[in-house]
Length: 539
Image (cartoon, rainbow, N blue to C red; front, side, top):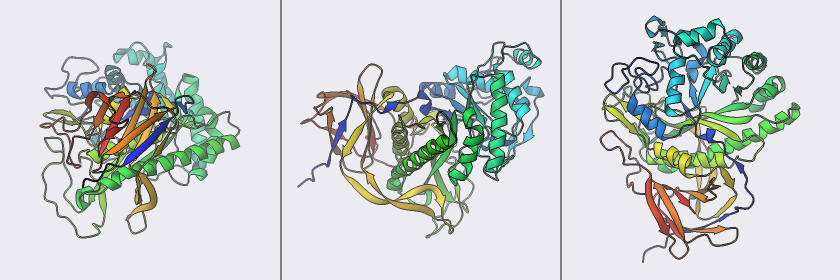
C-alpha cells in the first residue's frame, strides 16, 4: 500500500503583524577583481554583447544588465569585500586610458581600474538599484572626499571633476560602509576592537559632515562578538545605522557526492547566529546609552562549495559551470580544501537561500532586525547571474530572489508550524575544528519552513520550503482560527527538477525557474507541497 503523505498544519495570525521588512534585505554584492564579478561579468570591453557607444556604460554587458534588472535589486555593495581594504577610489575615476593599473592585494591579480565609481553608479541606475559603497576606513580624508565627489552639490574642485567625468548632478549615494572585516589580519588596515572603534567614530563623524543623510554600516563580527561590539557601540554607536554580519555555509558535494540534506539544513545555523547577534547588539546598545541599536546588515552570505585543494585549479566552463579537468575522489579526509568559485548553484542552494530569507523575515519587529542583506555574489563566483563569453544565464538561485522580491509581502505575519521533522547534526557553516573538519551541532530540522507575509494589496502570501528530498507534504492552512480561501495562486521553484544536483546552463537555461501554476484549489482543504521545493501561495 502507498504510504500517505505527511501532513503539516500552519496557523497564520493576520491580525497582529510581527513587523515590517525592508526591501533592502533583497540586496546584492559585487567585488572588483573577484572571479568575474566585474571583468568578464558586469563589464567586458570588446565583447559583442557589451555596449559600444561612448559614455559611462561603455563596455557593460547588456545581457548581464538585463538579468540583474529582472531582480528589482536592492542595494548593491561595491567594491568589496576584501578588495576594499587596499582600494583608492581616485584610481578609478577620469579618462579610462589614463587610470593606473595596480597589483591587487586581496586576490593576487591586477586591477585595471577601468570600471570605477562613476561606471558602477551609472550601472546601478541602469539596473534600478541603490549603490552601497564601502570605504577601507584607513584614511578619513579619503573617505570624506569620496562622499564629496559623489554626493556634494557645492561648487568644489572635486564636484567639477565629477562633471568632467560625465555626471553633473550629485549621485546621492545613501549607503556607505566604514571598513570591511577590519578585525581580520587578512585586511590591510587590520585593527583591534578599540582601534577600530576610534577610527569608526572619526570616519563616521566627518563623513556625516559632508552629507548628513548618509546611512553608515559599521563592521560587526561573527566571533568574539561582545569583545568587539561593546567598544564599537560605546564609541561610535550613535553615528552608525547598521552593523555588518558575515556568514558562510559549506557544501561538500564536489567530493563527497550528495550533500543535499546538509546544505538545506544550514539556514538553521544562520538563523541561530543572526538572532544571537541581534540580541547582543540590542543589549550592548542599551548598556552604551543609545536611543536605539543599529540594525544588522547581512552584507556577505552564501553557500560555499568546497573541494580538495590538491585538485587542479577550477576554471570557468563555457556553458556556465566548471571547465573539464582531471579530478580524483579522495578516500576519507581530503586534507586541505578550498572554495570552488565556479561551481554552479543547485536546487539545494536554492532551498538554503530561501531558508535564510525566512530567518531574516523572522527578525522583523526585533529592536535590531536584519534590515539589509547582500549575498556573495550577484554575477559569477557562485552568484545569481552566470556570465561567459557566449552569453549569460540565471543560476539556480536567481529564481529565489525573483520569487521573494516580487511575490511575497513586506508585512510579516506570525505563523506556527506543526509538522514532520528530523533530528540531525547540522553543519555550522564554514567553521572548522582544530583538525580541519566542519563543525556540527544537533538540531531539529523541520521539513516545512514557512514565512507568512501580507502584501500591500492586502493579500496574504505564504512561502513554504519543503526540505524533504522525496516526500510531498500536505499543508493545511489556518488563518485567524478559520479556514483560508479554497483557491490560491501558486508559484514554485524546484518541484519539477528530479536531479537535486541540477544547475542552469547556457544550453539549458530554465532547468530551475519559477513555475507559475496559476489558481490551484485545495484538495480536501489541503495543498500538496512537493519535495525539494519552494512554494509561494497567494491567498
